[in-house]
Image 1 (tube, rainbow, N blue to C red):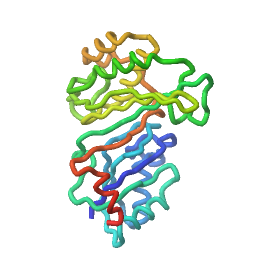
Image 2 (image 1 turned 30 degrees about the horizontal axis):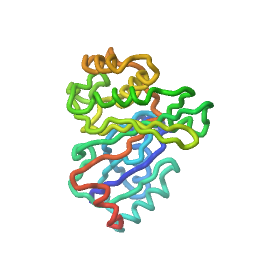
Image 3 (image 1 turned 60 degrees about the horizontal axis):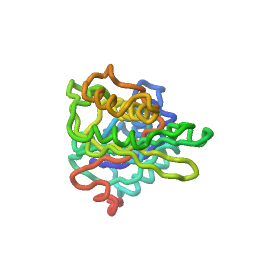
Length: 259
């Protein structure tokens, strides 16, 4: 039986999602180790996206094949009991012929920025912190420039092949005052290039700091030249928030978690 699940994790202690050599902590490595312990045989886990070192997830989608004689909720509980405290399945259910990467319609990432007079140690690995204001309106104008289908070569390289064209459906900032000022960048696209979101955020922050104008941002973007990219935003402010599918998952699954 093929299962699909949503996984949330704090990526601070891991060298990204994708499994690496023995001894290197990764999200995939921990998932496969826990599954092998429960099921008694090696299991391969596929994911919707390969998050970088230090990047977090609220809505990573995975799939794996397993011979499990009990209901899905029992599998979820068993896995969460074996996983480290910073990784946890949120939803699970059967999904024949499903592939989390190839069946995805879009991915949603969010990036968190915290602005306060003094650094906030509790959020060191949760947000990019600044002790000065950013020009929110200028960042919002620049963010809208990348909406639609474009060549995004300025912001990264594809993990496979040479195609750098992507379609962006959402690119916008929001702000919320909760003791400190929080700025959140949301981007939804068909797929992403390596470090694409972090480069976009880095360049938008340069606009917010008046290190480049909105026109400079647009010119660099339209050049489709990676050499024109600016700073790379740190990974710890980035979250894989959701992955969209034609059947509405996870909403289609959340009402029947028990399989």
